[in-house]
Image (cartoon, rainbow over all chains, first blue to last red; front, side, top):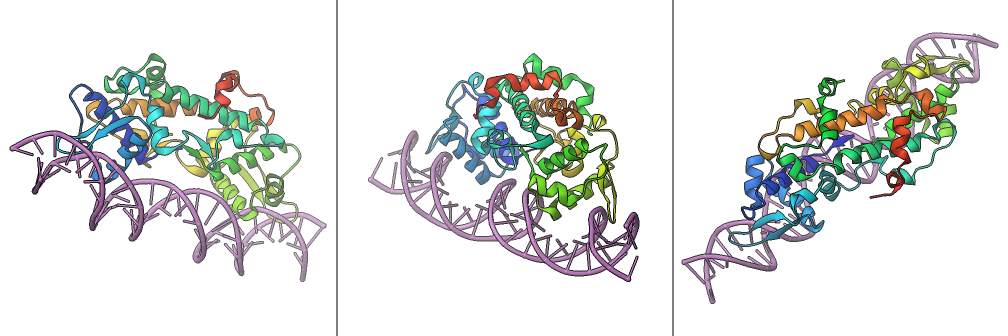
Length: 152
Length: 152
DNA sequence: CGGGAACCCGAGTGAACAGGTAGGGAATGA
DNA sequence: TCATTCCCTACCTGTTCACTCGGGTTCCCG
């Protein structure tokens, strides 16, 4: 269960765009510089987000990228799904396509529950929430447990 | 966020062992056959579980594998960590090693919350729970929402 | 209307990983 | 002794990750 570099970069770029929502478009290179991301790599990611309808863009002199919708209406799940496909998969296929028998029979239900729990987090928090450092209560409750910060 | 084949296979094998806990050891080949897994591949996985202290083994005539502890005391997280390393990582590193600045500053908290939520599911359910098809209430509540079964 | 400044696009690349295979060595019980 | 079963190392093939290169296309501005 790894968050890919694409997903991490995409979210960070989207947060920059959210923070600059009213101050006009941002250039890919500017975002890449201050986030420490390869410029060309980020361009590919922003391209995915444009094709996914999350951002708009303009070429030329003072072009750049900006969010297609208000940051309050874009969840982290939207961003991640856009650049990485399905949020959670088992052996590359989405849970509902699986089937188990024998003692593993209710394993499918378990994977579904796992996915639901990931969705609760990622669907429930918007770019605006993170950019303003105001996470919903259910989310910050999870992170408030000191055990959550320990490694194993 | 993919569950690897190793993790899926490891859990299924562990569930077989849980179901056969009182009827003596199971052979790798027998498990592989009835789960439809490559025999040699599964042997590698069982080897990891043995090195991780989850199962014990015996060679020779009627040898095989069995759980090192009662199935009630082994969580799915134990199994998955054993064969796949950390449950969730960002770009290959564990969340606490990350640091963000700017509008992404509270992204770390978010990843921590995500990990906590995954742990709640995977740490909270034991092999015995799944093998007996008796998931804890918090888990089956998550899966009871019909939306949890729809794809995106 | 020219000329940069940006976005846009596809191909390529090295390393890592996923999933699986092969072959043989070491312990066990009959 | 001998079949059985676990144990170990190595290898293999295809895919993905993260990134790079070299342009092409569209835009505003002077």
